[in-house]
Length: 378
Ligand SMILES: [Fe+2]
Ligand SMILES: [Fe+2]
Image (tube, rainbow, N blue to C red):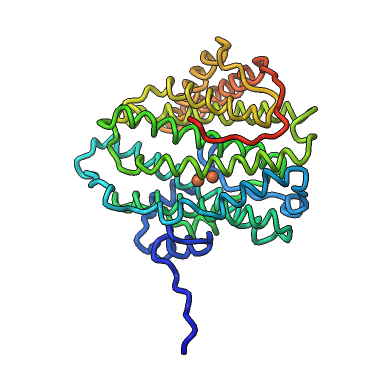
């Protein structure tokens, strides 16, 4: 009798490891378009980056101080409630890409490429940690998170393929530039990107529950389960930070403030580059930003001792200024020549000064709870 051979799943949604998920996507890479991959390859302040870190330092973390919460979270992730979820089914509606307003189509494809790159950036980092580590707790967590992100990136790529474009993920892994971050910066940045990802997805999902007429693409129907994955990933980073009180006190609070400001400001500027997209989904990007900042701030109180004062009048004023500087930089690039360069420089200087103005708004402080544990309630 033959031993049963393990068949590779056909879809990245069914993959149980990141490697499997990526292999399935690579199979389809021959159909993928150059322009989408070129967009994903871009490294600017506003485009998602790939990260690398000191994996040995990360591997040395001892999770005993948070053991109870840790085991509960890992068991929940191992149960894998979203296995098989991230693929098209009968509720996937036909998308009229041909008939879509060209401006909306461009912005929406840009949104999908940027989301796919961000999801895949997490996958690459988590997978690498799993591969290099020896600490069972750490490798187990990172394998589970890489699995989820590979599914997310694969699913967005499926949606892109319908529009005749897709990102070549294998090529990206090999060729995209990697930015080195010390582990503590990885914690702050990744924790925040997971939690803000949750807040973004759930806010959109709730909006479409009230206004289904604005849901012009079926992928938004998947956002609830999706955001629950991101929520768990954020919980994991909160626990990692909880193992060492130094990470969230002293001078590190200034770093936390820096990352909060950078992550919020980047979201604001990036979303304001897509007016047609926000118009189509019936969302005012200023309202959306406020909603997401409020939710993310509330969540991040689980581990960070400060939150940004988004009610301070300087906050909104300087975000708008930052957006205008960003528009100026883009115009300068388009214009070219000496005049264009000058326009880019002056607006870059303006953007740097505006960021400093945002950073120096006094933060709000509060007492951090003993256990960071939270449930997704939005
Ligand atoms: Fe994700
Ligand atoms: Fe995630």
